[in-house]
Amino acid sequence: MKVVVIGGSGLIGSKLVKILDAQGHEAVAASPKTGVNTLTGEGVAEALTGAGAVVDVSNSPSLEGSAALEFFETSTRNLLAAADAGVGHYVALSVVGSERLPDSGYMRAKVAQEQLITASGLPYSLVHATQFFEFLQGIVDAATDGDTVHLAPVLIQPMAADDVAAAVAEVVVGAPTYAVVEVGGPEQFRLDELGRSVLDAQRDTRSVVGDPGARYFGAAVAERSLVPADGARIAGTRLDEWRTRTSNGQ
Image 1 (cartoon, helix red, strand yellow):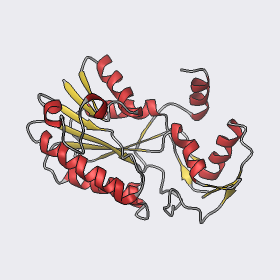
Image 2 (spheres, rainbow, N blue to C red):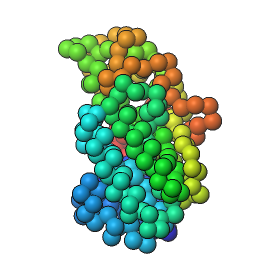
Image 3 (spheres, rainbow, N blue to C red):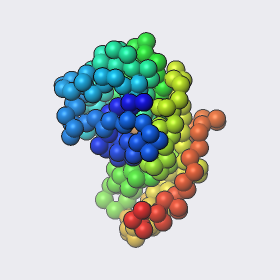
Image 4 (cartoon, one colour):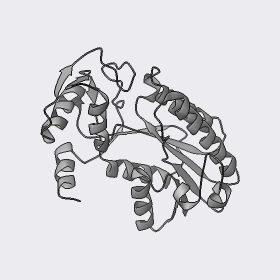
């Protein structure tokens, strides 16, 4: 099956292309680097010609709300218009908790993207993944004020990017679910404790304050805002295993 991977040159997309290729599918890495620009529409129809499935793992270059909304709405409308020609499965990667974080302009943009897909009439599946291990450092840095990191003591259940790509691949080659499929890591942490762990691993001298009022990229977070519901698919890679693997260059 021909599977077009929008964002196929990025972190998740490049891994997804390798997985699908190894399974014998014709995985097409579609991104501006390969002449496919979903914002302008350039190359989109040509890339989707003959595709059995399209999977969108692209991301807005900006986390700012209005910029993210423009990216996701424009990109998704262009993709849906091209996919309407006969694509049998439209899959998009989104974020666990997106609908629970209305303070975040970025999350509102992701919700808008999903609404366009579900209203399109196309066979679809939405994959909601928890935060990636690869982005934990970014969470700490975004919450830093001087030498202090303010993180709310709420639950978080991060996962490896390899596991995200594997979960998306499983959904793409299956039947459309017409629903959200949640995936998360095998361990839950308190966000502030995880922040300390990140700093300790880097021998970083910044201190973490468990601050119930601290915001997560501008959004207020409750106890379970960042974790999947019961029944989610659980990945296998634990944080310590991932750290060992990445430190060994794997």
